[in-house]
Image (cartoon, rainbow, N blue to C red; front, side):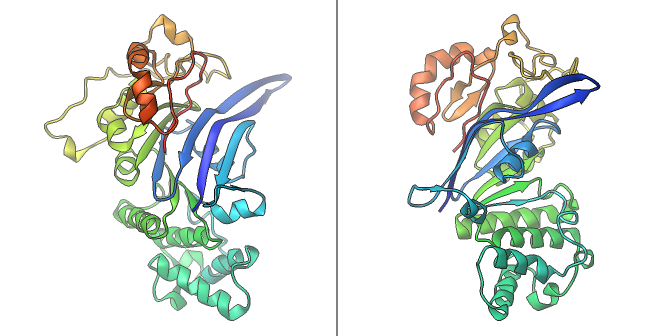
Length: 349
């Protein structure tokens, strides 16, 4: 199975206003690893850089720097055309990602042919039918001849998942796959992704702003803010014991029916950003909203270990990070406390 390694991923966009130019850093040294059979959730508010990371992994955007490496089961690097066989993306809006003029069967047959997964019309149609059955769209022959507008939102998203699996994908990038769906059918789509992951040992990157689904659907969570990963670790640890002020703010705002009798440490209301996104400068990007901001926050914090495989890029944990860095770094998946000029790349396995 395929393992995907993302290291120090950076994406800069040039902004033009008349004769003036500036640089917007949408992703700043993001690092994590996707391994077969596990899900990593990338969470954060709109504009945090989640979808930019997804589009770079899917090769829809070219990174400014950093590396994205797919490793096959033999440990060899997967590159070129083979990369697209292994890594596929499920987009947020299932209607916009499907061509309304073509049948569902056409959407599945095309990737099968382009990626050399089938030869001959009979075999191609049989495989398309099997893909529909794998995503619980039965009878397959009935759904195959329909067009996207004849399906519900949940059914269209199941078609999009089937299309992602058609080339033989082993790494699936799900960019907010249920945010455009009715609440009543979101669980069905998430359960489908979870089942496919178990049955086919997929590596999944789940991008969302919903902490509740991130906790229950993923193994590890990376929290992004203004292009940087500010906290990373096991899903339950990050959600139930958030250590970065931004994660605490998100967790305190998320409804949780299981929170009866348990309360997070009171979190003062955070202000809105005082100004535009800093282009590429140093410092914690949350400091203009953080109720615990200190003068040292003008310097970029390192990833300080705050628990087993749990890291927070916050100066509040600088002392505890120095005390426990040796023991925790050995327990983590190749992670260790970073240098002072580290920009907060996350770690998850």
